Length: 339
Image (cartoon, rainbow, N blue to C red; front, side, top):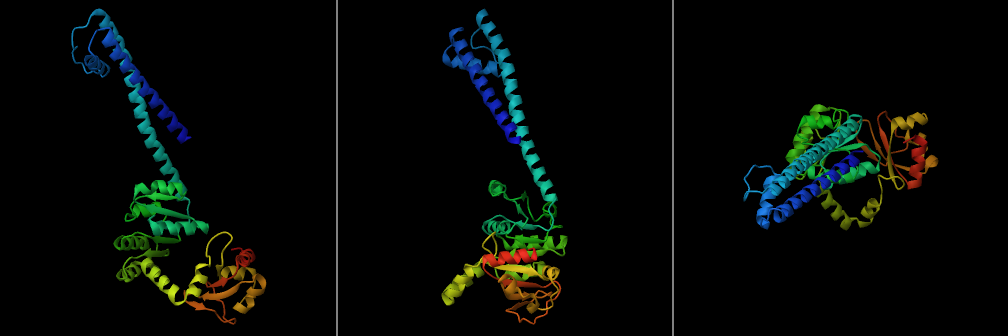
């Protein structure tokens, strides 16, 4: 509906411009052939008449020229007034449409809960959002660069245009209701300030921040970040690993953590496991026979990881298991435990 209104206003503007061109052409031709003015004088008289600036005639007008001027003035007042009203309507309509879009977006965001807030939609931020959306994770982007707005629209990503350094913008993104916050700004100082503000607003949120310098790692952790990622360091480690253990890295690169039909690794919470059967140890799960998946890791209630846990390991509340399997095995796992 908004697009149709805007299209209608633009068509009216085109019509108004066409009428202005026509009345100007009539004025020039009239003064040239009725009053006998030169082309330059005819243009001058037409402009001052249509614009109603009140300048005097180039030469005194005869009766026929005066009657023509009267009709030209009346027609000009109507056409110019119409053109001004249409242009004003266009400006207001454009402003109102943007305001309506922003209000609709904000109303949509106000209904978000346990979502992920991503700060920055640059190279890293875009990759983050793509992964989250592939995993059907609700997310919203905070971006202060209005030029990126069209990219966010084309990618169909919920967003808020504003500076994340301001608490008001963070609250508009629902940071107090979010489950995670990812700061992917290119500047470490900006990441530090945003992380600090986010932690003050939401004490329980999981904060992940990007860092360019290793010296920023400790500062970001102290500010409240749960995890700090150094993309350059990870990239260097990965390239070196491709030389040292190329086969292993190729295997890892081919694992998929997100997607609809190609997931190889899944994380299952203890509460999901317990809801289906009374289990105490990993052996009690009998996961290999039920789904074909293999347990490769265990995360206890304190966040500590155990690689390749023993079958007699007792599962604790709020813990998680990490399993590996082929996509069809992971699909069976998801169905069995309603993941």
